[in-house]
Image 1 (cartoon, rainbow, N blue to C red):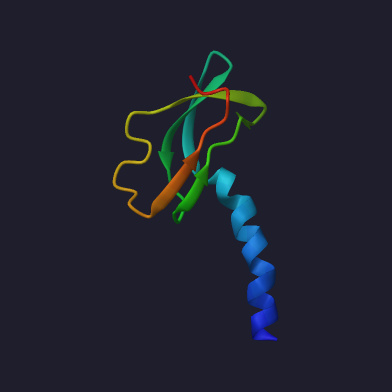
Image 2 (image 1 turned 90 degrees about the vertical axis):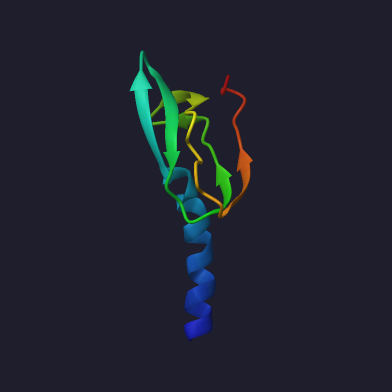
Length: 77
């Protein structure tokens, strides 16, 4: 039973990864300012709250040595 529960939780962790960011809005667009997730693959969403993500802050991944890969959407300049 324990093994089955763990397997069922893994997809939920991956799905929540897009929410692991602190961001700011300006003029109807979003800039990611910080990654707060556990690490691994950080997937930057193309939109947040219906607004396009167009930028990544200078220190968005500062000291996040657990991040192994970052995927950026085409909307990021």
